[in-house]
Image (cartoon, rainbow, N blue to C red; front, side):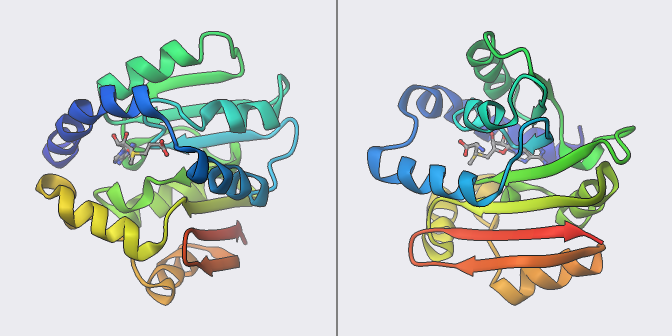
Length: 204
Ligand SMILES: C[S@@+](CC[C@H](N)C(=O)[O-])C[C@H]1O[C@@H](n2cnc3c(N)ncnc32)[C@H](O)[C@@H]1O
């Protein structure tokens, strides 16, 4: 991993215990489930989950993909990866790996869905992340960028947290749609809501 990733991973290492212990509150979990449902995961799907964190939503997507499906959960923070691995012990369809999406290699056309949940703004090189996403999807495969809070709230949280995440801002819808489309996706849905954000796109 490069030095930017290492700096960011230290930040998330420190956050890991707290995230792993708390999970989502009752209000947010409804939105999380609604966003997962909206993603349309089908049994047997192969899913890449970059920025899986401690694996709070990984079981929910793995459950929908079923035992014939597969989830590759990836994170730059070794401590997040440790927590995620522990949680996934009973789910053989989930593989958890340490690494950055920007540095993934050798997965051409392998996935049906790249599911970025509460993670996209944190990627150091978003253009490269989109390039990797399009390459590792099959034709017609889906990209989802989802947040269980409004764009404004997400950006407030990151700015307030400061340090290496203070500029990890979720762009305005059109400013996100443009690079997504220029990397070879067709945007299917883009919802910039008062308590959530959801973009889904299909590989052309
Ligand atoms: C806010 S947390 C979200 C975790 C999880 N998706 C959730 O909703 O609970 C963002 C995660 O993205 C990870 N991350 C940041 N940049 C990444 C990158 N370039 N590749 C993979 N993971 C990354 C961080 O280490 C962190 O665990």
